[in-house]
Length: 197
Image (cartoon, rainbow, N blue to C red):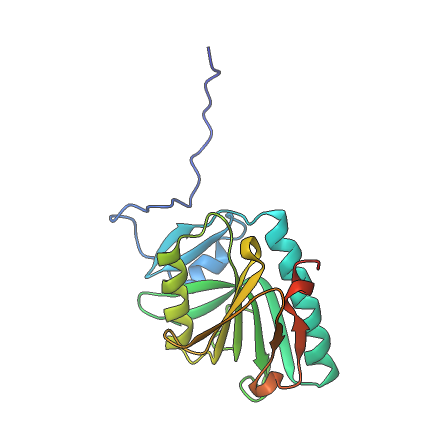
């Protein structure tokens, strides 16, 4: 017989009850460590913690970007599911794997809460649990606030899609080189290098 438990169920549910009160981004921030989640139109949505390969690729690309941005004094690189406001009332806060924000877009710095300024670049690393419809929704949200490019990194196929809009994209394979544009002009890294090749 299985032991019984009186543990409180988790706050975050993948399909929240329609009757649950809507949360704001500020309220989400005050909840503290409740696990991986995003706020979509005021409702919490659970996110599966990424696996080791996801984390390794994120750190590797983040390191290359951070060195380049720091050397050229361009702005900031943020990672680790940094929250950014997409919409308000009700609030939508997305979590970005990596992002680059220039001094031009954030002359007064990034602040301490969720970002309210659109980065020039957002990087999303695809996990095995990600569904294509959810990825498309995130891409749409990022472009809706003024993000210039999204790099969609796919460890499973060792490839990167460079999105300039929802309909304009370029596929790079492990034989190609990923080049930065805009404020990241001059940045380059072999796609294979991101995956350890």
